Image 1 (cartoon, rainbow, N blue to C red):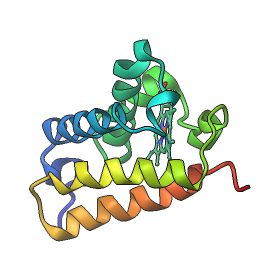
Image 2 (cartoon, rainbow, N blue to C red):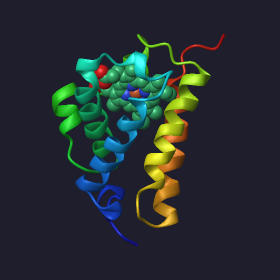
Image 3 (cartoon, protein in one colour):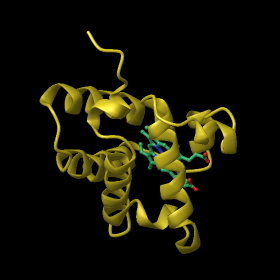
Length: 126
Ligand code: HEM
């Protein structure tokens, strides 16, 4: 048994920073996702995702200090998140997660969460 959080187990800030920076490099060239992010906001969007994921997995709580309660479904309402957008998001995220050097258990814990969370963000079903 260990009391260590996934954040610590997986390697802390540097690992999450690499994950998010890899993810956004792919978002920046994705034909579905790219138009959702104004040029000027890419860096800030990456920072928000980084803070959120670190907090979710037991790292620093900077996200809530700066942004309040996550309310992620509500914060995604302004965007057209259909199944194609979800799949594009997951595809970028899968490549980024695959780059992490860690145990298969930690990787699948992280990935299962991201799959479920991405499903929950879909708000267009036509
Ligand atoms: C399913 C496909 C998804 C799409 C197309 C999508 C798209 C977006 C867009 C366009 C934004 C606004 C960028 C910004 O200014 O921050 C955003 C914000 C955000 N997304 Fe997603 N997202 C998706 C899934 C997810 C998932 C699964 C998570 C978490 C595990 C997540 C976490 C966040 C966070 C933390 C923010 C910033 C919220 C804030 O504090 O304002 N997103 N997303």
